[in-house]
Image (tube, rainbow, N blue to C red):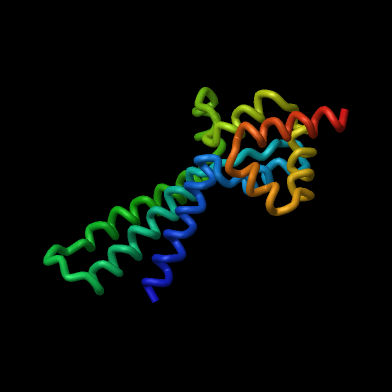
Length: 160
């Protein structure tokens, strides 16, 4: 049971790392689709802390039960619980953290470039156009930030 939960949390942590390194653009673009007064930004800190905490909690239990190292690694589960508590705190204090971190860029570099070069309306249009792309094209743009930004420029020029 804990092995399955560890695999799930490690997989979600790997997905988040792909998002933060710019290799998976869909979840960030999905944030731009929303309408409303306040523009939603991608805030990965609670998810990064939460998934890494869960991976540590379940991973330490898996290592205690399957591998006999002669060392008790249950202390890792305490670190994992601490990370989960930090994730909950950062989830509920997102606005404060965001206000204090105004000078820091958005973590995927392509999203930071896109935020500086486009308006909110253009980013929403790009997010909806992303849904219309075929899967192979999305895979190509996921792997190449330069090609994605060129596509974004072409979409903006075509819709003017």
